View 1 (tube, rainbow, N blue to C red):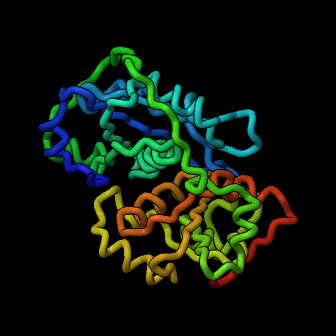
View 2 (cartoon, rainbow, N blue to C red):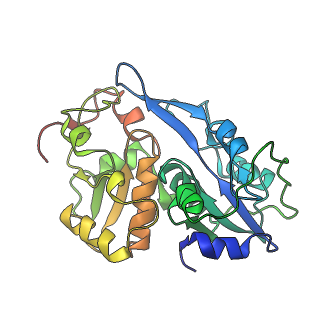
Length: 286
């Protein structure tokens, strides 16, 4: 199954049995001191305008284990599966995800489903902006509560889809693994942008900014060319990171579209790594 769907194709599917359309949007903005990102729910925007029949799955409430010591830490597979089931995603579902923030949060929702073993999922090409640009119908006003899935999905976690700090430490210097930063070139070099506790990058990591990958619209061949430019070899295992695992999910999703199969998102990313001065970081060109 294709990993993406066009707005026109989704419009033709709306109302089909088993189809669940999720809006995964979260709004973020830099903190005044440029040390982290601040976040707020996109629920009000969803109530204002949305794809007809879609459901807002607010990651800030449902997909963040706040007992863990870094931002956006994923809950257990069981809690994650229960969150999706509460929003209608079950064994018999087909899911389409979109957001209104350029794709990073839609891909985070996608990668979370991928991690728990749910594969019947696609991203809307161009997100909600493309839906509106195509002149397709939009609902507004209070949305009805989501209907829970009649047959909840049974999690089948892919352990290798999520990396922890020990896995990243072990990957440094391993030619079979590419650790790749999805943040901007300035953040990678430590010369500008948010610092996430310390400026720069995980030692030895490459850089392929998620901002270059589009909103599920870039052709796989173009993604592969960007990966080659960044020094990511076909067949390498890739561990993607960013500030909190969100842009990294965009990178992992797009590399999957381009043919990479051994992919992980470092869940803690720099929000965990940057807090510990014992963990190696670099600045400057690289």
